[in-house]
Image (cartoon, rainbow, N blue to C red):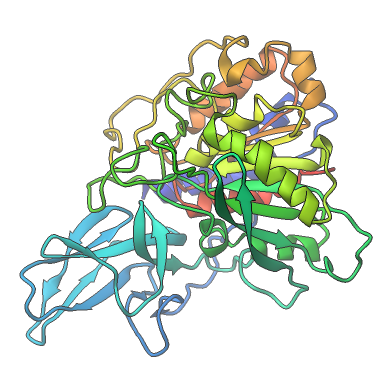
Length: 457
Protein backbone atom coordinates (compact mmCIF):
# COMPACT_ATOMS: atom_id res chain seq x y z
CA UNK A 1 0.00 0.00 0.00
CA UNK A 2 1.07 3.67 -0.40
CA UNK A 3 1.86 4.09 3.31
CA UNK A 4 4.18 1.08 3.27
CA UNK A 5 6.01 2.30 0.17
CA UNK A 6 6.48 5.76 1.67
CA UNK A 7 7.72 4.21 4.90
CA UNK A 8 10.28 2.04 3.11
CA UNK A 9 11.47 4.88 0.87
CA UNK A 10 11.92 7.33 3.74
CA UNK A 11 13.60 4.73 5.93
CA UNK A 12 16.30 4.41 3.28
CA UNK A 13 16.67 8.18 3.05
CA UNK A 14 16.88 8.66 6.79
CA UNK A 15 19.37 5.82 7.16
CA UNK A 16 21.81 7.76 5.00
CA UNK A 17 21.08 11.23 6.39
CA UNK A 18 18.72 12.16 9.15
CA UNK A 19 17.24 15.21 7.48
CA UNK A 20 17.43 17.44 4.46
CA UNK A 21 19.55 19.74 6.60
CA UNK A 22 22.35 17.18 6.55
CA UNK A 23 22.77 17.62 2.77
CA UNK A 24 23.89 21.18 3.44
CA UNK A 25 26.84 20.36 5.71
CA UNK A 26 29.15 22.75 3.92
CA UNK A 27 27.13 25.75 5.09
CA UNK A 28 26.05 24.34 8.45
CA UNK A 29 29.18 22.60 9.70
CA UNK A 30 28.53 23.52 13.32
CA UNK A 31 25.08 21.96 13.36
CA UNK A 32 24.25 18.82 15.28
CA UNK A 33 23.02 15.79 13.39
CA UNK A 34 19.45 14.77 13.98
CA UNK A 35 18.91 11.35 15.52
CA UNK A 36 15.45 10.10 14.51
CA UNK A 37 13.67 7.41 16.53
CA UNK A 38 13.97 3.68 15.81
CA UNK A 39 11.09 2.28 13.76
CA UNK A 40 9.74 -1.21 13.15
CA UNK A 41 11.87 -3.42 10.93
CA UNK A 42 10.31 -5.35 8.08
CA UNK A 43 10.90 -8.68 9.84
CA UNK A 44 9.62 -7.65 13.28
CA UNK A 45 7.08 -10.24 14.52
CA UNK A 46 3.44 -9.16 14.56
CA UNK A 47 1.89 -8.38 17.92
CA UNK A 48 -0.85 -10.92 18.86
CA UNK A 49 -4.45 -9.72 18.98
CA UNK A 50 -5.24 -8.00 22.28
CA UNK A 51 -7.72 -5.60 23.93
CA UNK A 52 -6.89 -1.92 23.56
CA UNK A 53 -4.58 -0.90 26.43
CA UNK A 54 -7.04 1.84 27.39
CA UNK A 55 -9.91 -0.61 28.05
CA UNK A 56 -11.18 -1.10 31.57
CA UNK A 57 -10.20 -4.43 33.20
CA UNK A 58 -12.00 -7.36 31.59
CA UNK A 59 -13.32 -5.33 28.62
CA UNK A 60 -12.32 -7.03 25.37
CA UNK A 61 -13.31 -4.36 22.83
CA UNK A 62 -11.99 -2.40 21.09
CA UNK A 63 -9.56 -5.20 20.20
CA UNK A 64 -6.41 -4.67 18.18
CA UNK A 65 -6.12 -7.54 15.74
CA UNK A 66 -2.86 -9.14 14.60
CA UNK A 67 -3.01 -7.30 11.26
CA UNK A 68 -3.65 -3.92 12.96
CA UNK A 69 -7.36 -3.92 12.20
CA UNK A 70 -9.49 -2.79 15.13
CA UNK A 71 -12.73 -4.54 16.13
CA UNK A 72 -15.40 -2.52 17.94
CA UNK A 73 -18.44 -3.77 19.88
CA UNK A 74 -21.19 -1.49 21.15
CA UNK A 75 -24.37 -2.58 22.96
CA UNK A 76 -27.43 -0.58 21.92
CA UNK A 77 -30.46 -2.90 21.48
CA UNK A 78 -32.95 -0.14 20.64
CA UNK A 79 -30.71 1.97 18.39
CA UNK A 80 -31.52 2.33 14.70
CA UNK A 81 -28.01 3.26 13.56
CA UNK A 82 -24.61 3.05 15.24
CA UNK A 83 -21.35 4.33 13.80
CA UNK A 84 -17.79 4.57 15.06
CA UNK A 85 -15.91 7.72 14.11
CA UNK A 86 -12.22 6.85 13.73
CA UNK A 87 -10.15 10.01 13.60
CA UNK A 88 -13.28 11.93 12.60
CA UNK A 89 -14.42 9.56 9.82
CA UNK A 90 -17.67 7.61 10.58
CA UNK A 91 -18.12 3.91 9.76
CA UNK A 92 -21.32 1.87 10.12
CA UNK A 93 -21.57 -0.94 12.67
CA UNK A 94 -23.75 -4.01 12.03
CA UNK A 95 -26.39 -5.00 14.58
CA UNK A 96 -26.50 -8.58 15.86
CA UNK A 97 -29.54 -10.45 17.23
CA UNK A 98 -28.29 -9.80 20.78
CA UNK A 99 -28.37 -6.01 20.29
CA UNK A 100 -24.57 -5.79 20.02
CA UNK A 101 -23.28 -3.74 17.10
CA UNK A 102 -19.90 -4.69 15.58
CA UNK A 103 -17.38 -3.33 13.10
CA UNK A 104 -13.82 -4.28 12.13
CA UNK A 105 -11.78 -1.49 10.58
CA UNK A 106 -9.17 -1.49 7.86
CA UNK A 107 -5.58 -1.85 9.15
CA UNK A 108 -4.64 1.20 11.19
CA UNK A 109 -1.18 2.79 11.31
CA UNK A 110 0.91 2.50 14.49
CA UNK A 111 0.28 4.90 17.33
CA UNK A 112 -2.59 6.55 19.15
CA UNK A 113 -5.89 7.32 17.39
CA UNK A 114 -9.08 8.99 18.63
CA UNK A 115 -12.50 7.50 18.12
CA UNK A 116 -16.05 7.92 19.41
CA UNK A 117 -19.48 6.40 18.85
CA UNK A 118 -22.41 7.99 17.01
CA UNK A 119 -25.75 6.49 18.10
CA UNK A 120 -28.78 7.64 16.09
CA UNK A 121 -26.89 10.83 15.34
CA UNK A 122 -25.79 11.52 18.92
CA UNK A 123 -22.10 11.62 19.88
CA UNK A 124 -21.33 9.15 22.69
CA UNK A 125 -18.17 7.85 24.30
CA UNK A 126 -17.60 4.12 24.44
CA UNK A 127 -18.32 3.29 28.10
CA UNK A 128 -15.87 0.40 28.43
CA UNK A 129 -12.66 2.34 27.78
CA UNK A 130 -10.87 5.52 28.80
CA UNK A 131 -11.92 8.95 27.53
CA UNK A 132 -9.55 11.65 26.30
CA UNK A 133 -9.84 15.21 25.03
CA UNK A 134 -9.75 15.72 21.27
CA UNK A 135 -11.67 17.46 18.48
CA UNK A 136 -13.10 19.86 21.03
CA UNK A 137 -14.89 17.14 23.05
CA UNK A 138 -14.25 13.94 24.96
CA UNK A 139 -13.23 10.97 22.80
CA UNK A 140 -12.03 7.44 23.28
CA UNK A 141 -8.71 6.22 21.96
CA UNK A 142 -6.92 3.09 20.87
CA UNK A 143 -3.23 2.36 20.43
CA UNK A 144 -1.83 0.28 17.58
CA UNK A 145 1.60 -1.11 18.47
CA UNK A 146 4.67 -0.63 16.30
CA UNK A 147 6.36 -4.06 16.46
CA UNK A 148 9.79 -4.01 18.06
CA UNK A 149 9.61 -0.30 18.95
CA UNK A 150 9.73 0.61 22.64
CA UNK A 151 11.17 4.12 22.94
CA UNK A 152 7.72 5.45 23.97
CA UNK A 153 6.89 2.48 26.23
CA UNK A 154 7.42 2.48 30.00
CA UNK A 155 10.68 0.73 30.92
CA UNK A 156 12.54 -0.15 34.09
CA UNK A 157 14.54 3.09 34.14
CA UNK A 158 14.55 6.06 36.51
CA UNK A 159 11.28 7.94 36.10
CA UNK A 160 10.55 11.62 36.38
CA UNK A 161 7.35 13.08 37.76
CA UNK A 162 4.38 14.84 36.18
CA UNK A 163 3.08 17.51 38.55
CA UNK A 164 -0.22 19.34 38.31
CA UNK A 165 -0.09 22.98 39.31
CA UNK A 166 -2.35 26.02 39.33
CA UNK A 167 -1.12 29.57 38.93
CA UNK A 168 -2.89 32.91 38.87
CA UNK A 169 -2.58 34.91 35.64
CA UNK A 170 -2.81 38.59 36.44
CA UNK A 171 -3.40 39.45 32.80
CA UNK A 172 -6.72 37.57 32.71
CA UNK A 173 -7.43 37.62 36.45
CA UNK A 174 -7.97 33.87 36.38
CA UNK A 175 -6.48 30.64 37.69
CA UNK A 176 -4.82 28.47 35.08
CA UNK A 177 -3.89 24.79 35.13
CA UNK A 178 -0.57 23.33 33.97
CA UNK A 179 1.33 20.05 33.88
CA UNK A 180 5.05 20.12 34.65
CA UNK A 181 7.40 17.23 33.95
CA UNK A 182 10.41 17.11 36.25
CA UNK A 183 13.24 14.71 35.37
CA UNK A 184 14.48 11.85 37.57
CA UNK A 185 16.46 13.16 40.54
CA UNK A 186 14.82 16.59 40.56
CA UNK A 187 13.99 16.32 44.28
CA UNK A 188 17.27 14.63 45.24
CA UNK A 189 19.72 17.45 44.53
CA UNK A 190 18.25 20.82 45.38
CA UNK A 191 21.25 22.71 43.99
CA UNK A 192 20.71 21.69 40.37
CA UNK A 193 18.85 24.00 38.00
CA UNK A 194 17.27 22.94 34.72
CA UNK A 195 16.39 24.28 31.26
CA UNK A 196 12.71 24.39 30.30
CA UNK A 197 10.71 23.28 27.26
CA UNK A 198 7.24 24.83 26.89
CA UNK A 199 5.13 22.36 24.90
CA UNK A 200 1.85 23.21 23.17
CA UNK A 201 -1.09 21.04 22.04
CA UNK A 202 -3.12 21.11 18.82
CA UNK A 203 -6.60 22.38 18.00
CA UNK A 204 -9.45 20.88 20.02
CA UNK A 205 -7.04 19.70 22.72
CA UNK A 206 -5.57 21.00 25.97
CA UNK A 207 -2.64 20.59 28.36
CA UNK A 208 -3.36 16.88 28.98
CA UNK A 209 -2.58 15.53 25.54
CA UNK A 210 1.22 15.63 25.54
CA UNK A 211 1.14 13.30 28.54
CA UNK A 212 -1.87 11.12 27.67
CA UNK A 213 -1.32 10.68 23.93
CA UNK A 214 2.18 12.07 23.42
CA UNK A 215 3.81 10.16 26.31
CA UNK A 216 6.25 13.01 26.82
CA UNK A 217 7.36 11.85 30.26
CA UNK A 218 7.99 8.29 29.06
CA UNK A 219 9.92 9.41 25.98
CA UNK A 220 12.15 11.71 28.02
CA UNK A 221 12.68 9.14 30.79
CA UNK A 222 13.92 6.65 28.18
CA UNK A 223 16.13 9.20 26.42
CA UNK A 224 17.62 10.32 29.73
CA UNK A 225 18.37 6.73 30.72
CA UNK A 226 20.54 6.35 27.60
CA UNK A 227 22.20 9.76 27.96
CA UNK A 228 20.74 11.13 24.74
CA UNK A 229 19.19 14.31 26.17
CA UNK A 230 19.90 16.88 28.81
CA UNK A 231 17.66 16.76 31.91
CA UNK A 232 14.94 19.36 31.44
CA UNK A 233 11.60 20.55 32.73
CA UNK A 234 8.61 20.46 30.40
CA UNK A 235 5.65 22.81 30.96
CA UNK A 236 2.34 22.03 29.28
CA UNK A 237 -0.61 24.44 29.28
CA UNK A 238 -3.63 25.13 27.11
CA UNK A 239 -3.41 28.14 24.84
CA UNK A 240 -7.12 28.88 25.35
CA UNK A 241 -7.43 32.20 27.16
CA UNK A 242 -11.19 32.58 27.49
CA UNK A 243 -11.14 35.52 25.10
CA UNK A 244 -13.50 35.54 22.09
CA UNK A 245 -10.58 34.92 19.71
CA UNK A 246 -8.93 32.35 21.94
CA UNK A 247 -7.68 29.19 20.20
CA UNK A 248 -7.67 25.83 21.87
CA UNK A 249 -10.51 23.88 20.43
CA UNK A 250 -14.08 25.09 20.65
CA UNK A 251 -16.09 22.97 18.18
CA UNK A 252 -16.98 24.89 15.06
CA UNK A 253 -14.38 27.57 15.77
CA UNK A 254 -10.56 27.79 15.53
CA UNK A 255 -10.41 25.37 12.62
CA UNK A 256 -12.22 22.62 14.53
CA UNK A 257 -15.50 21.49 12.95
CA UNK A 258 -18.37 20.23 15.07
CA UNK A 259 -17.97 16.67 16.33
CA UNK A 260 -19.03 13.98 13.90
CA UNK A 261 -18.10 15.89 10.77
CA UNK A 262 -16.44 14.19 7.85
CA UNK A 263 -12.75 14.27 7.13
CA UNK A 264 -9.43 12.70 8.05
CA UNK A 265 -7.51 15.46 9.84
CA UNK A 266 -5.70 14.60 13.07
CA UNK A 267 -5.40 18.12 14.46
CA UNK A 268 -5.68 21.74 13.46
CA UNK A 269 -4.58 22.62 9.98
CA UNK A 270 -0.96 22.13 8.97
CA UNK A 271 0.75 25.49 8.89
CA UNK A 272 -2.16 27.13 10.66
CA UNK A 273 -2.68 28.01 14.28
CA UNK A 274 -3.60 31.64 14.24
CA UNK A 275 -5.82 33.82 12.11
CA UNK A 276 -3.98 34.38 8.88
CA UNK A 277 -1.40 31.69 9.59
CA UNK A 278 0.95 32.34 12.48
CA UNK A 279 3.98 31.06 10.68
CA UNK A 280 3.39 33.18 7.61
CA UNK A 281 3.05 36.60 9.11
CA UNK A 282 2.51 38.60 12.25
CA UNK A 283 0.10 36.25 13.99
CA UNK A 284 -3.20 37.18 15.59
CA UNK A 285 -4.40 40.73 15.81
CA UNK A 286 -3.62 42.47 19.07
CA UNK A 287 -0.46 42.58 21.17
CA UNK A 288 2.76 40.91 19.96
CA UNK A 289 2.56 37.16 20.42
CA UNK A 290 -1.22 37.19 20.58
CA UNK A 291 -3.41 36.84 23.69
CA UNK A 292 -1.81 33.62 24.88
CA UNK A 293 1.64 34.99 24.21
CA UNK A 294 0.93 37.77 26.67
CA UNK A 295 -0.09 35.27 29.34
CA UNK A 296 2.92 33.11 28.69
CA UNK A 297 5.50 35.90 28.73
CA UNK A 298 4.02 38.00 31.54
CA UNK A 299 2.54 35.34 33.83
CA UNK A 300 3.45 31.71 33.08
CA UNK A 301 7.21 31.93 32.55
CA UNK A 302 7.82 34.19 35.58
CA UNK A 303 5.69 31.87 37.74
CA UNK A 304 7.59 28.78 36.59
CA UNK A 305 10.93 30.49 37.20
CA UNK A 306 9.84 31.40 40.74
CA UNK A 307 8.44 28.00 41.69
CA UNK A 308 10.85 25.61 39.96
CA UNK A 309 14.65 25.48 39.83
CA UNK A 310 15.03 26.75 36.29
CA UNK A 311 17.89 28.25 34.33
CA UNK A 312 15.95 31.43 33.66
CA UNK A 313 17.51 32.75 30.47
CA UNK A 314 16.90 32.45 26.74
CA UNK A 315 19.72 29.96 26.16
CA UNK A 316 17.95 27.49 28.43
CA UNK A 317 14.38 28.01 27.24
CA UNK A 318 12.59 26.28 24.34
CA UNK A 319 9.09 26.21 22.95
CA UNK A 320 7.44 23.71 20.63
CA UNK A 321 3.95 22.72 19.59
CA UNK A 322 2.03 20.45 17.27
CA UNK A 323 -0.28 21.67 14.51
CA UNK A 324 -2.16 24.68 15.94
CA UNK A 325 0.42 24.65 18.73
CA UNK A 326 3.13 25.03 16.10
CA UNK A 327 1.35 28.18 14.99
CA UNK A 328 1.22 29.38 18.58
CA UNK A 329 4.92 28.62 18.95
CA UNK A 330 5.85 30.60 15.83
CA UNK A 331 3.61 33.50 16.85
CA UNK A 332 5.07 33.74 20.35
CA UNK A 333 8.74 32.91 19.90
CA UNK A 334 9.41 34.98 16.81
CA UNK A 335 8.50 38.21 18.61
CA UNK A 336 10.27 37.13 21.80
CA UNK A 337 13.72 36.01 20.69
CA UNK A 338 15.11 37.48 23.88
CA UNK A 339 13.21 34.72 25.70
CA UNK A 340 13.73 31.60 23.50
CA UNK A 341 16.72 30.06 21.73
CA UNK A 342 15.06 26.81 20.62
CA UNK A 343 11.91 26.64 18.48
CA UNK A 344 10.04 23.48 17.42
CA UNK A 345 7.25 23.56 14.82
CA UNK A 346 5.61 20.12 14.53
CA UNK A 347 3.18 19.95 11.57
CA UNK A 348 2.35 23.63 11.88
CA UNK A 349 3.70 27.15 12.13
CA UNK A 350 6.20 26.87 9.27
CA UNK A 351 5.77 29.58 6.64
CA UNK A 352 5.56 27.24 3.68
CA UNK A 353 3.01 29.28 1.78
CA UNK A 354 -0.15 27.17 1.77
CA UNK A 355 -3.39 27.30 3.68
CA UNK A 356 -4.35 24.58 6.14
CA UNK A 357 -7.35 22.33 5.64
CA UNK A 358 -8.48 21.74 9.21
CA UNK A 359 -9.71 18.57 10.82
CA UNK A 360 -12.69 18.06 8.57
CA UNK A 361 -11.44 19.18 5.19
CA UNK A 362 -8.75 16.97 3.69
CA UNK A 363 -7.78 18.09 0.21
CA UNK A 364 -8.63 15.81 -2.73
CA UNK A 365 -6.09 13.04 -3.23
CA UNK A 366 -5.39 14.39 -6.72
CA UNK A 367 -4.49 17.89 -5.53
CA UNK A 368 -0.94 18.93 -6.51
CA UNK A 369 1.62 19.38 -3.77
CA UNK A 370 1.58 23.02 -2.63
CA UNK A 371 4.63 25.09 -3.60
CA UNK A 372 6.05 27.50 -1.04
CA UNK A 373 5.79 31.15 -1.87
CA UNK A 374 8.88 33.28 -2.35
CA UNK A 375 10.31 34.29 1.00
CA UNK A 376 10.07 37.86 2.19
CA UNK A 377 12.32 37.88 5.26
CA UNK A 378 10.89 41.21 6.34
CA UNK A 379 7.42 39.73 6.82
CA UNK A 380 7.59 35.98 7.41
CA UNK A 381 7.86 34.80 11.01
CA UNK A 382 6.81 38.26 12.19
CA UNK A 383 9.94 39.75 10.60
CA UNK A 384 12.25 37.82 12.95
CA UNK A 385 14.52 36.85 10.03
CA UNK A 386 14.85 40.31 8.49
CA UNK A 387 18.48 40.27 9.67
CA UNK A 388 19.60 36.63 9.10
CA UNK A 389 22.86 37.07 11.00
CA UNK A 390 21.00 38.40 14.04
CA UNK A 391 18.48 35.54 13.86
CA UNK A 392 21.33 33.02 13.66
CA UNK A 393 22.92 34.62 16.71
CA UNK A 394 19.75 34.48 18.78
CA UNK A 395 18.21 31.16 17.73
CA UNK A 396 20.25 27.99 18.18
CA UNK A 397 17.67 25.59 16.71
CA UNK A 398 14.70 26.15 14.40
CA UNK A 399 13.24 22.64 14.11
CA UNK A 400 10.41 21.90 11.69
CA UNK A 401 8.74 18.55 11.08
CA UNK A 402 6.00 16.88 9.07
CA UNK A 403 4.83 13.38 8.33
CA UNK A 404 5.64 12.12 4.85
CA UNK A 405 2.04 11.33 3.89
CA UNK A 406 0.07 14.07 2.11
CA UNK A 407 -2.38 15.66 1.71
CA UNK A 408 -2.59 16.40 5.45
CA UNK A 409 1.16 16.99 5.66
CA UNK A 410 3.43 18.81 3.19
CA UNK A 411 6.92 17.26 3.32
CA UNK A 412 7.99 18.51 -0.11
CA UNK A 413 6.92 22.04 0.74
CA UNK A 414 8.90 21.84 3.98
CA UNK A 415 12.06 20.66 2.21
CA UNK A 416 11.77 23.48 -0.32
CA UNK A 417 11.14 25.96 2.49
CA UNK A 418 14.35 24.94 4.20
CA UNK A 419 16.21 25.33 0.92
CA UNK A 420 14.90 28.87 0.74
CA UNK A 421 15.90 29.59 4.34
CA UNK A 422 19.43 28.33 3.77
CA UNK A 423 19.74 30.34 0.57
CA UNK A 424 18.59 33.44 2.48
CA UNK A 425 21.31 32.94 5.09
CA UNK A 426 19.41 31.14 7.87
CA UNK A 427 21.91 28.57 9.13
CA UNK A 428 20.21 26.97 12.12
CA UNK A 429 17.16 25.24 10.59
CA UNK A 430 16.53 21.52 10.90
CA UNK A 431 13.79 19.40 9.42
CA UNK A 432 12.57 15.93 10.32
CA UNK A 433 10.14 13.92 8.19
CA UNK A 434 8.29 11.10 9.95
CA UNK A 435 8.17 8.12 7.56
CA UNK A 436 4.72 6.83 6.64
CA UNK A 437 2.69 9.04 8.99
CA UNK A 438 0.34 11.95 8.49
CA UNK A 439 -1.18 14.56 10.83
CA UNK A 440 -1.22 12.22 13.84
CA UNK A 441 0.37 11.42 17.17
CA UNK A 442 3.04 9.09 15.85
CA UNK A 443 4.41 12.02 13.83
CA UNK A 444 4.50 14.21 16.93
CA UNK A 445 5.96 11.57 19.25
CA UNK A 446 8.75 11.05 16.73
CA UNK A 447 9.19 14.80 16.38
CA UNK A 448 9.57 15.24 20.14
CA UNK A 449 12.06 12.36 20.33
CA UNK A 450 14.18 13.98 17.61
CA UNK A 451 13.83 17.61 18.77
CA UNK A 452 14.66 16.81 22.41
CA UNK A 453 18.09 15.56 21.41
CA UNK A 454 19.19 18.89 19.94
CA UNK A 455 18.03 20.95 22.91
CA UNK A 456 20.32 22.75 25.33
CA UNK A 457 23.57 21.39 23.85
